[in-house]
Amino acid sequence: MPCNNIVFRSHLVTLKVCYGDILYCKADSSYSVVYLEDGSSITVSKVLKKVELLLPSDHFCRCHKSFLVNREKVKSYNHVKNSLILKNGAEIPVALRRIRKVFNHVFSE
Image (cartoon, rainbow, N blue to C red; front, side):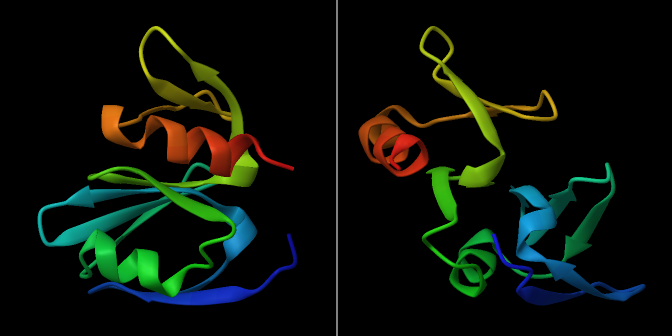
C-alpha cells in the first residue's frame, strides 16, 4: 500500500499517519482509538463513522459496529469465534450480519 497519509488530532498531539501503519480502529463512545503497527495508539475525538469516511474503503473494512480493520493486516479468519486475526495477533470481532461482506472484502485478490 502506498504511503498516503491521514492527519489525526487529539487533545495532546497532531499526528500524520501512513494508512499502511494503521492496524485497526476501535470505537470508544464519541471517540475512536487508532491502533498502529508500532504498538502505539492514538485517541481521536471523532466517531468511528467519521474515521471510516477519511480512510480509503478499498483498504479498510467495517467488520463490526465498533471496529474498522485494515484488510492488509489480516492474517486469518476464525470461523468458530467469528473474528479476524491480525498479523500482530490482535483478534477483532466480526458481526454476524457482516461476515459475508467482510470475508469477500478482506480475502479477495
